[in-house]
Image (cartoon, rainbow, N blue to C red; front, side, top):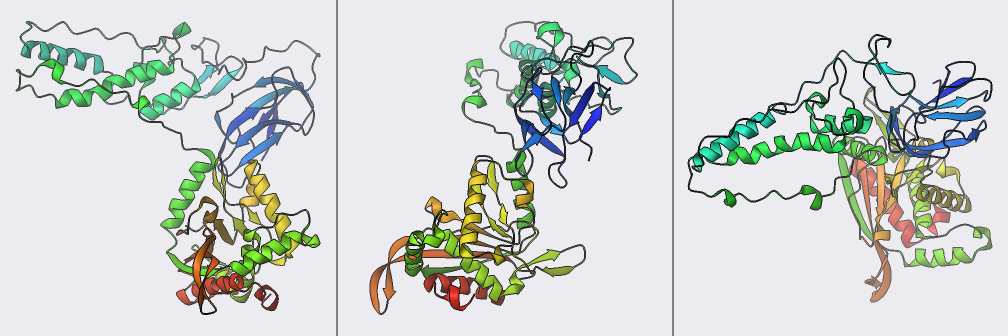
Length: 482
């Protein structure tokens, strides 16, 4: 899609691009430039987080940054202009740029000269207002009157005489003939809380509604529930018997679900309730595998790459898939077909600060052991840096998740959507084990294979898991079975 527009011969705008197939929005994590900075074609100007990964966005032309349209932390729809560039600085007078990103654009009251259906902002006009109006929150506007009536009834019950006159509700924050003035995050907060901004009393400068104003408007509605519980048939109960409300903020932390974490949550729910999961387990002696890992670390052919048990486990799974190719498939619901893959894009689940992601090694089946080790090292390093691209997470066929690094014995992993199987590797521990007729300390781990029972039956899944276990018990099978 086009990611830039020309507002004139001098100013060009850059839009939020679709950096991954089907994405609709992205959050601006960090700006690397500010108004007045000079930029060149290809220079990275910001980092954004999509539902799949964090991505750096380069600007496609030279010039001077005129305006940043959104501050850091804002979620922007694909196609919205995020930055304006002066491509011919010094050629004439230019409109003043908007405030720094930390100061979000504030809507102003409607003017006589504004275009019909548009609201003026600091620079130019915003999008046309929708004809759809949000219905006021039920009971929000009447909250002050309800509180006054409740106080009067309580006073009457307690013998304090006539009820006090009802309080006159203050004026709302809506200017004459216009929308209430509020910043975009405040509007979103009001929407999430179900508060109509037209009923909120502004306390900010120039009649701007603040976050505190929205919370204050929501407080009476929250107080209605305990007020309704009070029983008017027990006048002898003292008012002090009602406990004071405890602030939830001191007892809870609420974290918005967005970006990678939101996408993972949706994908896991979809996978768990779409594909019928079956999980099988096997405990295996991997002492010889651990000896092989130690030998490979000293091998000159493996110099410069990271060698660990995961490398041998990944190679074992690839060999098992080669011996049982039917497991490497996908379910096509639309066409009611099983799609067998003749390639293996091996996914490696990685825990990152932004959530769980599953990048995959493309055509892992064709890689030698040193090549696989190099690809694994690059994949893990990129994931930890938060630089995994959406393309690196697309097209996986099977996945490995190493829960053993957390000291966990095993688990029942959920399939990565669109894949047929996922192998969980537990912690490798020294345990008593019967070896050659005697109980000896051996390196032991537990493997768990989950698979989609629509396309992998119990026999096939068991064969794959048994093959992986057999290779890890006798690694020389990597040569004889490959």
